[in-house]
Amino acid sequence: MASGSPLGEFLKARRGRVSPSRADLSVSGRRRVPGLRRDELARLAGISEPYLVRLEQGVDRHPSPQVLRALAQALELDADASAHLFSLAAEPVRPGDEQVPEHEPEVSAEVHQLLDGWSGSPAYVRNRRFDVLAANKWARALGPMYEPGRNLARDVFLSPEARRLFPDWPEIAAQTAAALRAEADPHDPRTAALIGDLEADEDFRRSWARHDARPSRDELKRFHHPDVGDLALRRQALTVGGAEHQVIIVYQAAPGSPSEAALARLL
Image 1 (cartoon, helix red, strand yellow):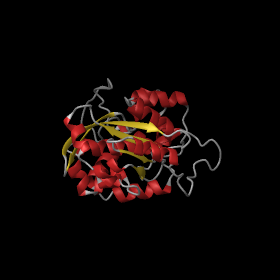
Image 2 (cartoon, rainbow, N blue to C red):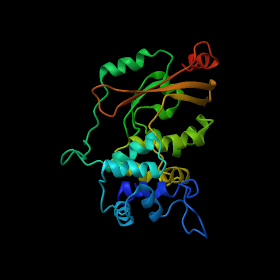
Image 3 (tube, rainbow, N blue to C red):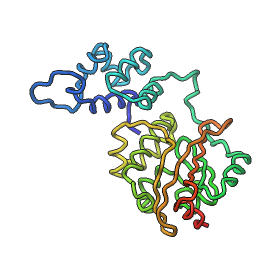
Image 4 (tube, rainbow, N blue to C red):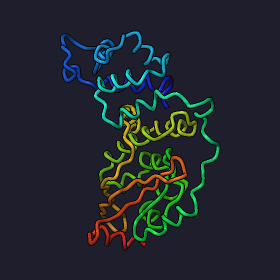
C-alpha cells in the first residue's frame, strides 16, 4: 500500500481528478499540476490551506464530519467514494481494534450447505481481502480463480487465464481495484502485502492510483469459458450474518437463456 496517511493519499489523488473549470474556478496561464491546487480545494471546501496540508501529510487524520462532507462535495465524490473518505478518517473505537485477527473465521457448515444448494449457479464466499474461502462445484468449474485458497484480485491482474475468462477485462480490472479499495482493511498487513505484490503489474498500478472506491455490486458480468463458450450472468453479493466481512457471491443466468444452457454443461 502507499506509504503515509491513506486519507492524505486519497485527498491528493482525488483533487488531481477535479477539473478547475468544472468546479467553477477561473483558469488562467499554465498549470503545473492536474486538477485542483491545494488552495483551490481548501477554498471550495471552506477550510484553510494549512489545515488541508496537514490532512494530506497525515499530521491530522481525523477531520470532523462537517469537514469531510465539505471535502466530499468539493471533490465531487459519489456516495461510495464519500463513504470511503469517511472510513479513512474514522478513529478506532478502542485501542487494538485496528489489529487484524491472526486467523480468518471459518465458513460455517450452514453456508457450505447453502452454496451447494444453488444447483447450476456458481457461488463462493470471499473475505474483504478477496481471498476465496469456499466455493461450490459450479464456481470451481467456472474458473480456477474460484478455487478456495486463491485470491481474486491477484488472479484478475496477474493470471493470463483471468484475462481470457473476462471479455470485458479492463472493466473487470477497474471494478476489482475499486472494490478492493472500498472493502479491504487498510490496517491489515496481509492486505498491504497483497497490494505490494499487485503493484508489480502496470495495469493494477494505474487502476489503484485512481483511488476509486466502489464495493461489489449486483450487476451483469460476462464470461468466455473455454469449454462452454460465452455466458452472461447476474452477480449478487450477499453478506453472511454472524461472520463479519464474509461475502457470498452468486452468479445466476436468466431462465431459458443460452447462458443457463451453458451453465448446465459446466459439469
